[in-house]
Amino acid sequence: MLYRFLLIVCLTTSACTLGSAQIAYSADNVAIFDGAGSPATLEQIIEASATMDVLFLGEQHDDAVAHAAQLEFLKRLYERFGAGRRIVLSLEMFERDTQIVVDEYLAGLISETHFITSARAWPNYKSDYKPLVEFAKEKKLRVIAANAPRRYVNMVSRGGRASINKLSREAKSWLAPLPFTEPSAAYAAKFRALMGGASEAQMGLENILASQSLWDATMADSIAKELRGPARPFVVHLNGSFHSEGRLGTVEHLQKYRRNAKALVVTMRYEKEFKSFDKTKHAAIGDFVVLTDAAVPRSRR
Figure: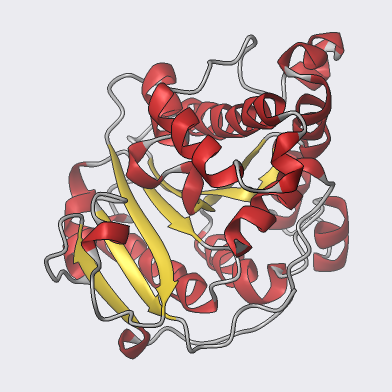
């Protein structure tokens, strides 16, 4: 219910209202499995990334342990591949029309205060995403503001996919190529099952699904464009787990924009019994599954 509520809020309002918490990565707070449930290690994920173009790290946005683990992933990937490949950090948490602001901050041209304000950073930016952005800044890694502007996602949720045809050429440049692709049958069924019990979902469910697809498609297009760059880039993309789990959503759209792109999907979830892999809940939700300790306080809203 919590995730369903957050998904509806994120799709139909101007911002997700998440807050602050900060912890350090600890192997004591996580359990790593392959997609079938066999125990695995962080190092296995790093090694599996060697032949990939994209690593999807699917999160629950209030999972402080997962955010600490994401930073650990980024550091180890840079240590392992940084000398020979261009590592890129891609974030759902920033929208395409703020890319110039992200670039200005990484170049040291503007202050952090102006960056946070002008890039419309999420309220939990400082605790949960700042460490990744600062690592990228230190190592001179590119950071992609990958998401569709939320105001246009909201347009679709209210008025349907055709509503964005009225936008200017410049506005459309911040979105996936139009008309953006319909969701797969599997993704649509999963979305309807998730949303169907919420009262908000009874009003314009298909529009909300279309807005979700615009979100997925735009993130995928942002990644695909980066993969066309020089020096065989390796993209580490952070998004809410629903966007990529089961290799659906954004992963499917990426295959349409960049057919030969190789993607590894890691899905992160907090669980009370995080050391146990429940096949009824966790099987095949990722190539790897990282379960985190639900007893650790969540990032505050």
